[in-house]
Image (spheres, rainbow, N blue to C red):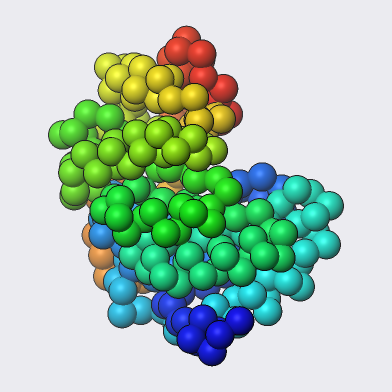
Length: 249
């Protein structure tokens, strides 16, 4: 390994050594710093600003990851880089994944896909699985949720299909916001055309990150929004399954 590669640095918020919800098996999860989206329900608002967090080298990350190789191997797990938005630091993430691939460690990228494709491609070369968060299919709702356009994310999804990159689509079910029947139907129809999508994860809205908003002085605009009922979750599952998609919730 060259000195230049070993000295690639990135900005991270934190890491979790034994995650079980961000990809298959037991995973080492890296939370990168910085995100171009401003999701109303973000549970890591302290990851949004690029200037926050701590600077670490790829080598420091790898030294931590290898401590958990036995757990990963036993559970068919690996490393997941999330955020924030990992693709805001493409060189850093690509090098982490390249090193992990050399070590036989499965790599997963959790992303909004809101990034130019030419920036993402070098990272995808070393990515085994993409966890693609599609907040909404309808453009007005997507902008309301994230403050940005949905088009880059939809284009990213199409590209993942073109290169046959294994993908899990993630959809946060928010009452009175993303759970509009037509919105879910449109997203299900869109995703159903992609043979690379292994499953759809329906993530019920929760307020576990609300206290973080208060701590950093941000207004949490969904404080009066209820969590989805079992009936609302069931409706969403049925819509996606109707289009032949494997669904977990």
